Amino acid sequence: MTSSSIAALERDGRLVNARHHGVNPGEIAIGVIIGRTSEFFDFFVFAIASVIVFPKLVFPYVDPLTGTLWSFAIFALAFIARPIGTFIFMAVDDAYGRSTKLTIALFLLGGSTVALAFLPGYEAIGAASAWLLALSRIGQGIALGGSWDGLASLLAMNAPENKRGWYAMIPQLGAPIGLIVASGLFAYFVSSLSAEDFASWGWRYPFFVAFAINVVALFSRLRLVQTPEFERLFDNRELQPAPVVETLQMEGKRVAIGAFAPLASFALFHMVTVFPLSWISLFTQEATASFLLIEVIAAVFGVAAIVASGYIADRVGRRTLLGSCAAAIAVFSGFAPLLLNAGQVGELVFMVLGFVILGLSFGQSSGSVASGFSQQYRYTGSAMTSDLAWLFGAGFAPFVALYLSSEFGLIASGLYLLSGAVCTLAALRINKTLSS
Image (cartoon, rainbow, N blue to C red; front, side, top):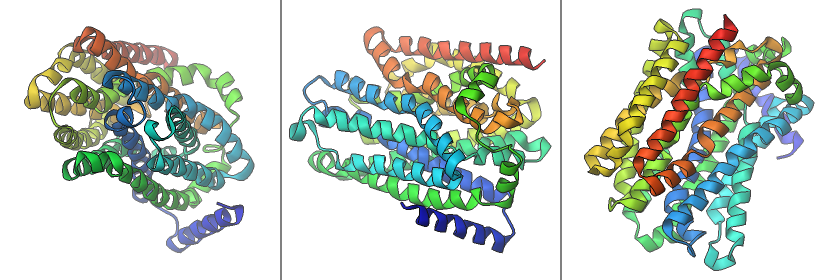
């Protein structure tokens, strides 16, 4: 994409906004949901493929468990690369503007994702297949760091005082919606194609879809970052990038607390999305398509729970809700993982219950501490907090949970989840002390 085409997109966004006299919070919400759904769809397409495709395609020379663990190790690379992407693209934002940054980042994300659709396997190019997989995953992570657009902050700033919790949950809806679409697509291809056709070309189709969704998200988000509201907040420095090093020097303590405050919900995020699919595929006889449909059903409950979190947070407070959910996650960790060995009914109970708790917690996790940043560092501080929260809370969760469960049983993954709940409660306690 050339600088002239980026400028044309930026100009078109301004013309649309001038014609419609800006946007209201409802329009911002739609744009935020589209953007987050595209990111999470990419995320889940790779995650599902890490379980049912990459171990056989890229690591056929090891046993299925080891191949899946290697796939999860590569899966984690995006979370390591994401803060690097934020560092790079904050400089691009400062030098060339947010439209340029966002366009480059989303095309890098789409390009890295669609490149996986052409990934040759080990039988074709040997170990280079794993290196190409890792390179594409790193590209996704850098792009995700650059795709931070500040729209969630814009949405929160346009929210009525008594509905901050309601508007805080809106960006989080992208996660279960992205999972529903990704799981549904894979379930369709797994169930309707022969094993040979799926292994040959069927698994590649969702990666093409991911690129198309990214293009739609790009236009939606560019239209919003050209709104008068966004321009005003940018000019007032409320949504202006600050140097990453300076932000960490001035707001490092709040960034650290913000990264650990949602640890329980981010750990649970992978415990009810990525990890169960790997356990079911490796250690049970259940058909992959059947469990993917269970994930779709559970994710619908997750959508409802996220919406409910908005109502509850506006009545009891966000910190109270997050603390209560962390306690619920601690209880959940003590028994729920064992349900994955209890047949389809047990799996459904585990997934639905997990998604309900996840929705209530995840729905408010993004704004738990970030709202406390000073105006000058809010934009960059929020981005860094999000990056580190995903890295510490979710990046290694599938690998660790699968390894512990395979070595010590499912109860070990519950102990891992419990550690996340303890970290969240501690971070919320420290943040309350600092804020008082």
